[in-house]
Image 1 (cartoon, rainbow, N blue to C red):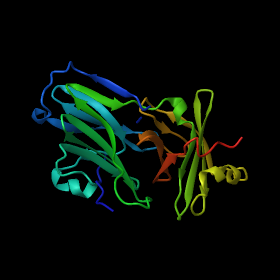
Image 2 (image 1 turned 60 degrees about the horizontal axis):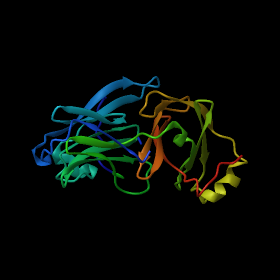
Image 3 (image 1 turned 180 degrees about the vertical axis):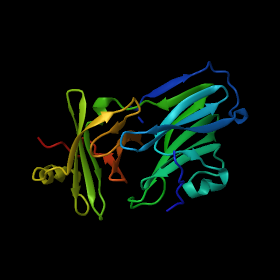
Length: 255
């Protein structure tokens, strides 16, 4: 496990393209920075920060995370960041960390986002591509639509597993959180297992902005894209839990 940064202080498969008119400037001449800005705290006291990229005169927000600070090049290896990255930032809070870096790949600047938490049973920082900048334009992944958030999210581990059902009542997202001993059975067997269980928590998930952060009685959290799927990071009694959305082809919600 890495040394956390202790400091006070998300996404349809389409692409959002914006920026100045292309001027074909060479990426090797660009000054690329990642800037952290504190946005205060949620009602539950969870810190909130925004991460921006600065290229020339352009400033664009690329992520919302909890805590954030710049990561110096000498510390890149501690966070799984390539030595030739142009800039990096991130932070650790409540047992989990979120990290971002920018790197030059060919004629483009590419942005990556990763995470690590105390509960993971694998190694590494799970970096996935967030978007890029080329020929004077940014191309960043669009945030998910509200309807895409509906589904079943799971975290399976020997020390105890979590399931979060997310549904909609009118325009309100509702979450039901289940805790099970040991690892989960195959997804196509969860339907039978869950019919005899009552949720440990059930609450409305109130989206606080268009970045798909939310507050709820069970804890604050964030929906975001992860590779070709979705995940939710949920703060449960001070412990950060990250659950992956189950694919519809593998599992259908119980009636």
